[in-house]
Length: 463
Image (cartoon, rainbow, N blue to C red; front, top):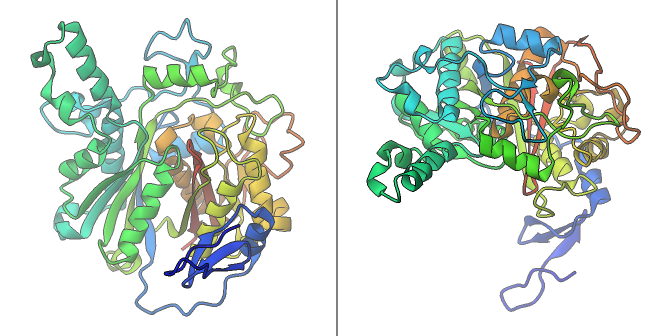
């Protein structure tokens, strides 16, 4: 393989551990999986921690989901393995091969947004503002009493804003191409950054507002970005999470690519991660948001701490639009990076909330990646896939499942993987089948994957 050219065109790199080094910088030379995993398994060198290093903790959480719109109900359903799957009611799915989903029920945006026309927001934005509002309330933090420039908001989503774009297009076509028929707000709201903008406007956040879109890895990447903002002393407090709404167009699209389960007869048992009979995921919707704070800031106001966001890692395989690399390279790289960022050895991991999308390809490949990074310790780690309970919230799934990790740490209990009756022989780890398990979790990991070969991982620690 050719090296990187030097100033005079000569190759100035050297190879080490399957990577290319140039001018002291690490660059991937090839997908040498064995070398990659050997690097991943090394215990990080002892690092001298600067006494002024800024640590990031979770002090508030808010959820709007098919499994509940408050933390108590949400956790009761997740740890009890009670699925929110049901026949689709949002639109007519009678002619579609998939007639089930996990929808948010009985949601009234006016309970959370006090404005003249709260319903004008896209449903995804409504969910996000509501969850962020609940997170701030749960944290017991008065954002108006803080320096506005020291507070930020980071949203993760895949198609937030699409609803407004579709409304604008339909209005234009239905009016015989009369542009004056368009609602100006649909034009303004039709970009994916509207969610973070709406949250900042609603809560008066002035320091930073950005939206991440990295497919179904968006939620984890949003939390990771917010964590780095706090570490780098850009802000002291951040609202971070993800939001998504189950639109008809999205549902129809996934029907076309056959990514969703078609077991319509028994919705609660339809999605089956790691099972031999799995045939796809259950589409969900909702939002999950966190209040993240710099540790001394949180302690200074006597805040309750759920867990520490200790590490974030992400990767892109550049392999295929929808299929993961057969060796799980993207998963492995994201997991290894997150553990390294958290200064955590693989043997310290106790719980993994897996992506577990129940597609024929994902589950054995995700299993393979976990085994490659954790090696023999993989057999001792409790793993669960909670999407059969909540639905797959797409860009918000990482945030929702990170919340499950935080609750598992707080309640000292690991939620189950439901509908796992006949494990795939290639999926041979401990997936906590059927029932929740009591365990004092100190280190939890959340893995998520998105189309385009994007992967994101977070490491949480008991504080």
